[in-house]
Length: 169
Image 1 (cartoon, rainbow, N blue to C red):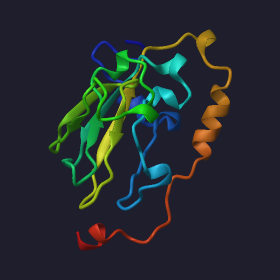
Image 2: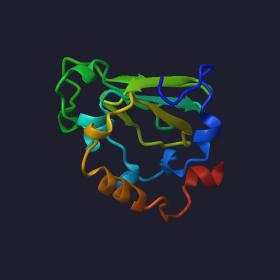
Image 3: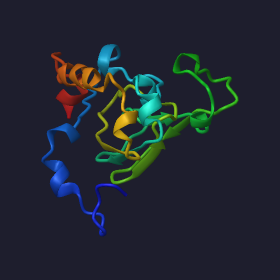
Image 4: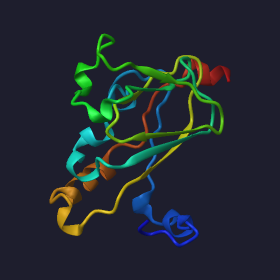
């Protein structure tokens, strides 16, 4: 694998690279806007032709269930032309809840339809990272620099009153 030593070590070097660190914070009680993560494919956010063959890995820092914003997936959707806006319960492809315990690992193709349920009683904390095949420099999107500037310019925090769930905790 590109960028890995024979024993798989790269984290030390990569951890210091600001371009490789991203975070998503999904506060309790936010059901609209950037914290509402409905059905989507990671690659449907503008880079399908360039990053569709990547994997997303989640490590559960806290357990997750229907009350805390668990991950839901549509198994097989990475092989089907199903747009997120058309996900319905009566599709031939089932919707599957993925409850996790602390320390569990989930892995899904970036082009698998998935969502995070809105947390109701407590928050879910997950460390996400991704893996993808290296791309040829010539195959990169001519708009990649523009997309990076937009992503880096996006707000990283939401100003809101504390959630009653967090206040009790």
